[in-house]
Amino acid sequence: MRHDATVRTIPVSELVDVLLVEDDPSLSELMVIVFRDEGFTVRHTTTAAEALRAVAMAQPDVMVIDVTLPGEDGAALCGKVKSDQATAGIRCLMWSSVPNLAQVASAAHADAWMLKPTDHELLVARIKELASGRGKT
Image (cartoon, rainbow, N blue to C red; front, top):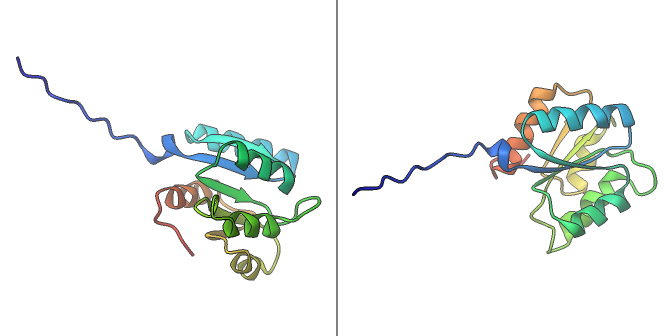
């Protein structure tokens, strides 16, 4: 009797664990829905301190980080994640409307950046690229 193994290809979206760090309640709610509809596992925090606790509990594949957070800003958060050997492999996408986002993201060693407002499909595509290891700006 012959048994053929069936191999299921799992789309990258089913494997992506996203930590959204955003303090705007309406935008956060919308993006959590968008990310979950895409098949991502999503956690959400509103401050850098909460995000660091979430990362300590379970490392995400990708962090989507707003720059302007209450308390410690998103750039400092990204810098801490990227400078720690235990978390340096987490892909960080800085997502904000600050005019100098490219410089802020570069200084924080972010893997990518996108200006708000962003088309949701472009943001999702960028997250997939980062999670698959192809995306680095």
